[in-house]
Image (cartoon, rainbow, N blue to C red; front, side, top):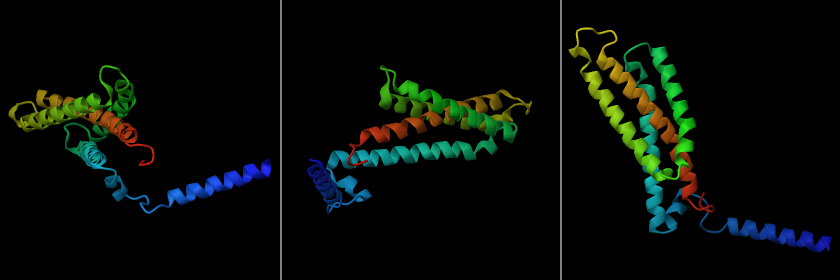
Length: 170
C-alpha cells in the first residue's frame, strides 16, 4: 500500500509540474488572456496603484514645503500614515462601507484635503502675522488629514487587489 501511495504522489507531482509549465506561463500578459472583464480589472488596479503611490509619496516628499518645522512635520506625517494604516482595515470590514466605498471615500477625502491645503497655502501671504497664521493651520491640518486618508488607502488597495483576482492568476 505504501508503494502505491508513493507512486500516486509522484504521479500527482508530475501532473502538477506539467500543468504549471503549460504554454501560457506566468507573466503579465497572461492577465490579459482571461477575457475582457479580467483585462479591465488589471487596468483598473494599475491605475489605483499608480494613483495611491503618487499621492502617498507626493505628500511624503512635499513635507518640507509645509509651514513649520521640517522634523515635526515629518514625524506627524509618519504618525498620520500609521494611524490610517491601523484604522482602515477595520473600516473596510464594516458592513455599511466595504472595500469599494472605503476606497472611494478615501480617494475623495484625500483629493479634497489636498486641494484645500494647496489653496490655503496660496493665501498664506495675505495675512499680517506670518507665524502660526490661520492659513498655516488649515494647510497643516488638511495635509495631515490627507496623509491619514492616503495612508489608509494604501492598505485598502493592497488588500483589495489581492482579493479581486482569482487564485490561479495571483
